[in-house]
Length: 115
Length: 114
Image (tube, rainbow over all chains, first blue to last red; front, side):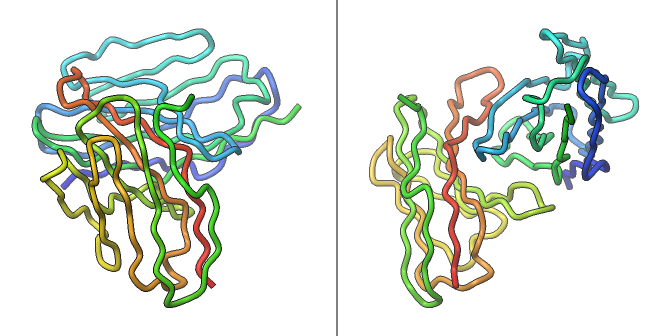
């Protein structure tokens, strides 16, 4: 069975602090895909990043970075120098298996950046 | 214009009423999905469709039905709404030929069943 765990339900930091959102996944498949989505207060889901199981390269996009470690089944997301606009609920998701369609979502982490 | 649109964006209805939520997309994707989001549970898949003739149940399809009227349209129906179907509903699309087949979501429909 596939499972995604985001153990941090809520995180609150002060603006300009760095913050890491944890994501741990479970799957028996050797081929799988991982995603992060952002849900701002307006409610829509915004796609942030994707990774496949064969690509363990970390990625940096501006203030965002992602650390994928197969050895610990983790795909963590770090925001550097956080800003109030980063306040949102962040979801990690897994699609597992070559022909799979289902996205399995974690419970989400609500991130609040205080001025 | 948004690539994936949902109507209505908000709906309040009463127990026992029939409700239809509509999704349209201009992305040209073959695959479409319906999810519901409940606080603390993330998103869960209700139904998905590979093409107009291919409809599949997700993990929580009971109480729901769908219709794929065209490649661009995928509707979700609640035949007799009940209060525990109060949730935020998302439609999504994906292109199976894309390397990651990532899903792109509509803006969501907030449904309240009284």
